Length: 153
Image (cartoon, rainbow, N blue to C red; front, side, top):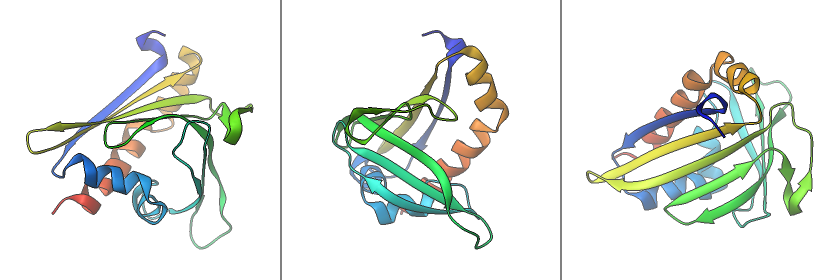
């Protein structure tokens, strides 16, 4: 992998790693921040074990829920690290997603809070550029801000 196939974003959240992990590991919490508002999120599957499914849906303006993420968790270390991909679904089943990514999320205790970082790997530099042009930093940044609002006290 090269930097041309990766996108990065991070934020210091003024909450402990346990609180940030709870926002990720409890479906009702994840639904509150995972997609930028006003788009609604529904969490259908959140099985954080390796090989476990990760399925979310989104809807805008009260319409029908549409596909968002259909993926598989690869690694899960509570309060430290979470890795998922969209090239596999639950039980390691291969798929051809509309955008192939592997996301490496870390939760590092820092300065009395959590440095939340996302490193998103793409198959090609073109896919990475496509994701960036679609608004990766704005979208993921908004979602992380929503996460911070949910857990910061």
